[in-house]
Image (cartoon, rainbow, N blue to C red):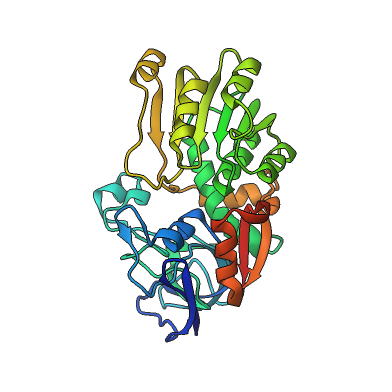
Length: 344
């Protein structure tokens, strides 16, 4: 089969590799149909690592995907050949203390699609996944929607873990795919006002079209001053979705006393900095968000019932052979890209 491999910094090459084989009784063979390019994929493309996770070349990344079941192991009950599925990229052990505590996303032995040292990604014509990572989708749901359910599940997990959304005043700093994945469920769950910032004007327009009451560019305006002018009591919760120190600084200024900061963005540096005086006087709560935990079912239901519309997120399309062009586009933030999709 064909597999698109990272072969160096900003280098990719299509290679012929052996077809994957079912090994375990609960394995599922999947023919990939579509993949979304994620920011973490681009981190590996641009720098070859995320923190301690370092690529050993050649390596296929990719973890936002949807496909068709081709073959299943003898003990698989969840799906059957011909089923259309969304793919949960996390593969927990289900036996460790974290899994037993309801935290499979921080499993001690977690394997994750496209994560160096854990599992090859889904930038291949076929992949093998355990049946617990395979989620059947209804006929009316597109493969695009199924693939985008992965980042949307992260946003939903962050929203569910923050504060009750009904009537909440929300900030989203960084309106890439994860920022949009926070916006959609926040509004669906009753947030009264959502304030968005980003440095790409096309993304700000997309935020306005999808329900943000404010969308500002911090390179062009004082977003903190403008938001606080409209909300003098400040915001209940702020989601940091871009991995930038300046966004965390802005978040602290935007939060009301007793407010909550949800950190989702993956920075390219090793340490965050917080202003102690402001944090202490406001008694701000800070919570990190690690991928998602058991929210994919709810996410797929929200999409199926049209409580959220993820289709505007897919702004660009590429063939499998043109994967490198997709990564270059996303890594350079060109053409107002939100989400680049790769078709097989």
